[in-house]
Length: 108
Image (tube, rainbow, N blue to C red; front, side):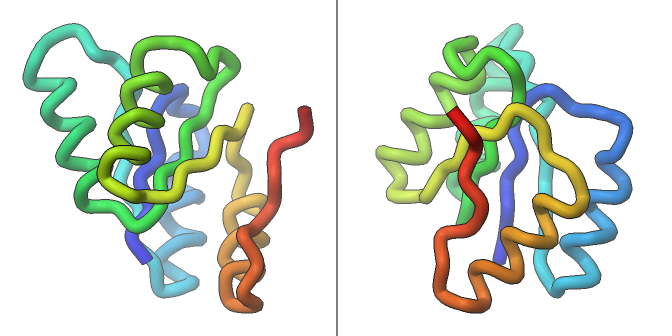
C-alpha cells in the first residue's frame, strides 16, 4: 500500500517510514506548506500516487488539509484526518487493514 502523509511533520517521521517499510508498505510525505504552485502540484502528485491519504495536524481546515481532502475525494482515494500520528497508530492501522477493517479512527 502507498500511503501519503500530509502536514505537520514531526520528529518521528523516520520511525514512521521504518514501521511502514517493515510492514511492506511505502510512505511519502508532504509538509503541508502550499506557498507556491509547485508545492500544490507536488501535493496533487502525492495524492494521485497514494492508496491512502493521512492528513495530520491540529488544524484540519488549513489550506493543505482542505486541498488534500478535496483531491482525495476527486481522485477516489480514502483519507483520514489524525491529530498526530505515532508509530503504534500506524502499525495498528496496517493490522486493521489486514483484517478488513478501516483502521483506527480519530477521537472527536
